[in-house]
Image 1 (cartoon, helix red, strand yellow):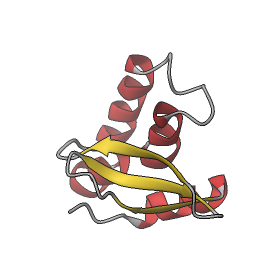
Image 2 (tube, rainbow, N blue to C red; image 1 turned 90 degrees about the vertical axis):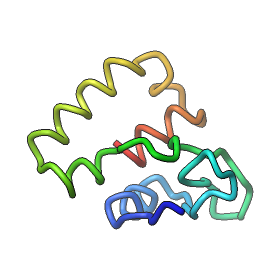
Image 3 (cartoon, rainbow, N blue to C red; image 1 turned 180 degrees about the vertical axis):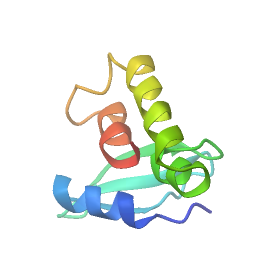
Amino acid sequence: MYQILPYTKNKAKQLKVIVEPSTKKTKKIDVYDYDGYFITSIGANGAMDYPLYLKHFGKEVANERKRLYKIRHKKDLSIKGTAGYYAYKLLW
């Protein structure tokens, strides 16, 4: 089970959503609004994200991985409310 790191919790506060460990075994996090309505599940279980890169490899590597992630997912991270949007905003 994925442990939600402080980086993601702080980002969730800024976006005004609630994050909890996912009930789906292939995802990391379930995202809910403040009324408790499920929005989406994000993050592939087993894949690294910005806070994990930061923790294990340092800021330089984490920033490079973030830059590459942004290039790879350019189409879906700007559409508010989508899984790609929340994945980028919360995990990267």
